[in-house]
Length: 480
Image (tube, rainbow, N blue to C red; front, side, top):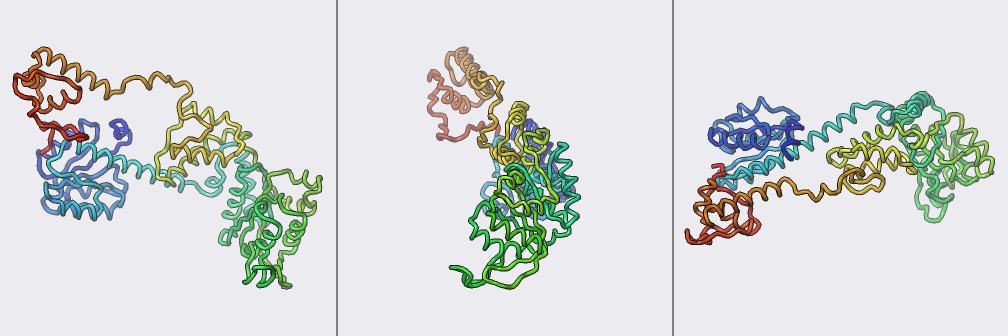
């Protein structure tokens, strides 16, 4: 987390430290890095400042007057289990550090520690807290939506009319036919009809008629008695019987054969079924909602769908328009799916540029709402989705070749050191005094920038050598 992110999210650090010098050093280090903080001297002072959803993290010393740091960790865990607490321990207090981690501490740092060590742990803890609070906010946003607005998301006149029609149909027991292209949200409408009806306590049973053969579909819908067919060793309850008291959703109805259509028509007319291999008629109280992606009336005219079944189901119908015909729903649906994906995967919301929004609005959406949902998940997970570019179309590619801030600072530092060395004829001692840094620090910089000095002021090789991969540390910057 950088300075701008920290300031923008208003996260802070609550520092609990009884030693005035240590407290001052830590708060100054945090302040210089742009991290807001508040410091207190005891657990008793810290308790009133903490509450569930505290917008920040806690950094506390282990040994304090009155209650100690372990007591504060336990308090924070009970208050908000996701609140990161960083422990400050004395050198050699490994046992206490282990105990703190077991009690839920996020991390610990050991005295004496450098400014960078403190900032590194703090930034990571703040980033974790920011993500946790953002996920909680997203979940709350989803929970604030109610009824049909939560299920049938959109701002177009079409989706508003669908919500009104669905609300009217949900209150009645009538069977419903839903039509629309693949991915337009037909099953979402069916679920809304169920959850907003007086059948909501009963089961919602969905079956895809196009995914199985006639024989398999027959067994799935009606069930069978033991021995009714090869391999039928036990009685099986079919989907229609299982949906008794609730709703049966038949997707891709157009895939049913003519013979299966006839059996379904009998169920709709009589509300009775017979398991395969049984002569007993069982009454079922089930509402049937069917969905199709083709024009069933045209299928009736072509002779591939029974006219009597069509007119029996088409008493009440809902038509779902493709997404390309209601583009004003795209931003609303995208935001909704981003919220869902961020909450599901515990990832931050991605920023969508205006250029990317324009690409989404211009897309033809052959996969409709389902395709948009998949894109939202890709954006949250930061993986390629194919529909929108990950780079702004009008971005300047030369910007990638510009030196970053770190490179510019290092180049500036190297130039200053070189000029001072030239001024003092390569004398390392005089150069270090002129730069007001320890000679060991200058030696590190010389190795870093591959600079050389003359050795008549003392062997520079005698200065400490930093192990490969170890971070630089200036003794003057150490927090004791």
